Length: 137
Image (tube, rainbow, N blue to C red; front, side):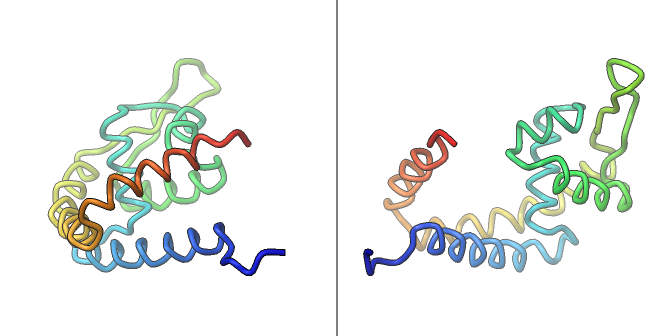
């Protein structure tokens, strides 16, 4: 057995640290990192079913439903009738668009901090992460 650190553990710890950094930066906006990411994705995608949104974001429906529920309670998203009577589409509200606008400068501040830390290694990190994301599972 190897004595090298576990790749999964290292990536999970790094993800928690990054999320905490972004959460701290986003705090003045009232959004968390997951909420901001979902609102930005929904803003780009437009109204879509939870299933399609889950596929687009890489979340499972249960986790996504919980976060979307919180965003709905805050007035940032709403559910509308979908393509058929059984489905519902989630869409961004004006309040959600305003929340994104408030949060963008905070998010940019966190991005700048990470870019300054990583420098040219950022592109290499992204290439490595792309390879990991492409693994067949």
